[in-house]
Length: 374
Image (cartoon, rainbow, N blue to C red):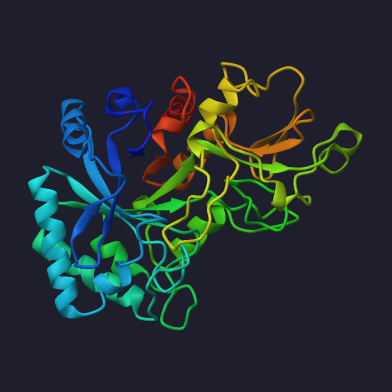
């Protein structure tokens, strides 16, 4: 599965490599204040997306939510009347647009995400009631949900110990195993660690997330591993990043000097987020940019002049450019191979890549597909 983000002028529906996927979800829509489904990012190419997906025998889903689209999730499912109305509106929207399913990306039930979302201690219970209602109204729709590395929180704010109700109503969940470390962290670290049980700074990983969700009653064969086609970067002086020429994985960085990411990370001066807070660069470099900007070669290997290491614990690579003094935590074909092998060994349902436009020459998608089938 892949998420297609509809806001890049140089990556449109016509650029999608459909052959690497059997499911694709359009990113993104949101619940508005009036219980309707609202497409984000202006002009929608949803109809073109659905048509192209079906032409290529790929299921077409729509994601509702995301970091910027979860403000009204809580209120949309807060009462029985709201749940019924919103379920009806979602079903009607899906059928009107010839969608095969809906992907929920509420960030996060019972917890604050962007900073100005409506939040209730009853969010998780209400979310399950809503999904159950939608399943009854539209039994033939595929229903999935993007989730964090810990199960939804219960009314006490702790991860639920029983997610089996969600497993009964959802076809699968996608564990968003990325952004484990980033500009928001206290130290540098892996963006998308496969394992952290061997780490000096354990903060969550694919393996710990799968263990947490299965322990809460969600079957492994209904779990899809979310994998990133992007990196996080950190501004770190050479003396800190690579003393004696060896990259330090967990080290301090200059949060005030966040690197400007690739062209997709451009923030117009004076822009604000959905909560009205000033926005700034977040240091995200997609995989294509690591190649295009000369950090990696066209086959995904490290370019000459760069320091690099592959962390055997997280099973992810790190790269350091001493000229710009930027440290990158990223994924490459080797780490995607490791993730694909894990998916197969653990009996997971598959993978979901955010976002499909981040790949370069299908290197990542080919690696993980090959690894899962070998």
